[in-house]
Length: 289
Image (cartoon, rainbow, N blue to C red):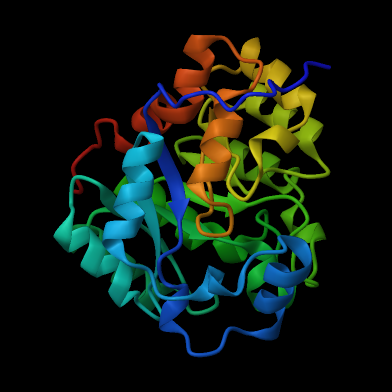
């Protein structure tokens, strides 16, 4: 297995950070499971859930070569911070939209349509373990209205895969549930996010199988990525894997140097950090009818 370089390399490759959180500081008290993730899983500082200063975030992005960052937002509880950042720096920030009520889908999907029309929404996002008491895998028909709407809007959809950090049900995030989704919705641009641990090999097999499926390594330290994924990136999947930090859970100052130190050819690294996200999320879109 390739070893990591001891020295921290300079960041020469531009990047798109596909998942950044600036909304944590809007909540006076995080739920207990979020605190447990911070303290026990990521062993992060108390400041992880504090307010974000836009100039400091931009400084870190500039330092690490991050040209764009996609900020988490929410239909149910819109992030004033994320939307303020997008308004102030539209060339640097766009939005990822979660908080979609799948049990009462029609009002939520009408709202999603309106938000996509009015704001720079790059993708929609849903985490099967994080709603509905973790009872609904991605293959369940409760998701079908969302899949249909995303196809209609030509809006990529990101779905959490892998066992989540919080003590909540994880089986619903097995990537195999996406097999049926990809068969039934071949036009849907779909991305697995937060890796796929411990089911990496299943995720890779699905990536080989389906043209419109991608994987994002958000919330994963690049030096912890499995060799099977790196091998796939070097061989059959140079255009399939996308970088994200899940900032501030993992700081850009940590994960971008780790990414640069991976045993990847230059063109594959450039695809991972920038080109794949640029093509998948920011390429030409059809106009809504």
